[in-house]
Length: 148
Picture: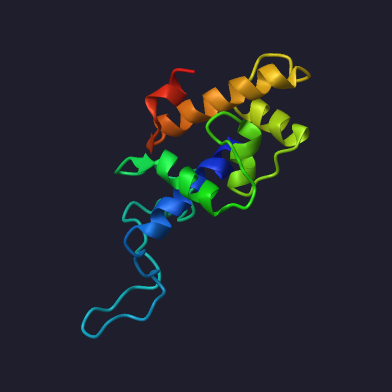
């Protein structure tokens, strides 16, 4: 899920920037008396170590208040964007390309089975599907946006 993961990461990253500071990377200098290894120890079984770069953003342990994040971004934006009703405005708000081709790509990413040339129907489906997927991945979404 390429574009959806990009969208989710852009939203969820605003939650982490307002939360507690991120832990120092493993390559950061160690504090006195507690050395930090630069590389993880090899697995005892001889199996290769797992990649440290996740392909998809991890599901947060605490629900992320998506509405609060997007409302804050909307308040800071000079353009009036209605993210609660428009997939175009939602994508613009988080700094993503919102062209018809980008929305068609998002629709393909989310397995839309309708006619992508009917952009109004596709946009409505995309908005609802994005809200549901955000909720399924740890986002706190207002119930009225999930029931549309």
